[in-house]
Image 1 (cartoon, rainbow, N blue to C red):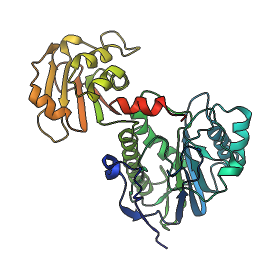
Image 2: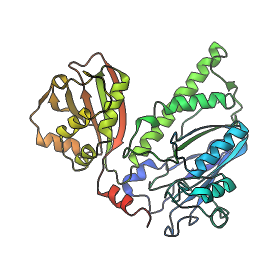
Image 3: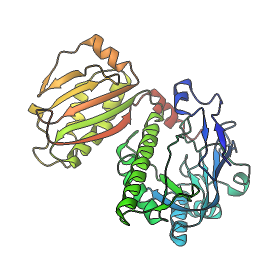
Image 4: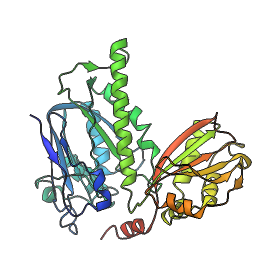
Length: 380
């Protein structure tokens, strides 16, 4: 049976975020999703905070957990569970918002073990599983984000149980979610899960079995990577208090590792992010962040050959701010046109010329009053 869904119309989704919420669509075959406001956090009296996704038959599961040495209790328990069952016969995922069950000691592990739940929200608080989780279950997993990150892509075929799914997901993560940054921090609850059940009835696919099957696998891999990359961008769009989506593109670097490191240093700079929140075409802060990139070999950055431009999303010409080590005169009107938009690409050419060298791209957002308001009052 095909199950349809429609977008929530609750007023807690701001108008600026409505475009990211699908108006309607179809659930993957053989899955159902339920959700409500369960009151996990007493001060939350209306927003959805608890969700369950259920498969009508057992699935193989591929999961990428946070690599941090201090994982939240739900992460640790879920990792142990998947190891015991070898990623097989998974049939449901339960997720709550508001309480992260992180840094909660023995009580947090006992609560997580009782329900094997994935959490997001406050650290240092234990979810009361008996009082909260046995209520009807939620619409979506929302931490301080507003819109549920849901998109549709057709995935044809089914990767072989566990191993193929895990390989595909790990590959996709390395080309998507590992290339975003909202504020430079990552959560000790971070978890990405891929479920495969073969409900379409199409043949199982696996890499390396034969030429035809290998091509099918790479097709699947490409579609999955596109899907995860889109979700990664939605995470950035939903950055706490964010008003602008930023693409940091480094070109003509001596290595891809160096390009990624430079992009990451720029994307995580509070001075860069606050300047862009204030619509300030401040190239000096970007160059400073570039120069602060740690552990680069000598000669990686050549100031006299470095160029920087602001690239608008509408395809119009870039605004050059720094060319071969020299600042350009700012066209204030053009700068305002570009910085008034909610998307912007910062393009850095680390050496003279457009050709040659390595490239990396990282996605981030600006940092403004909304971020401080949300995180300064997170426990209330």
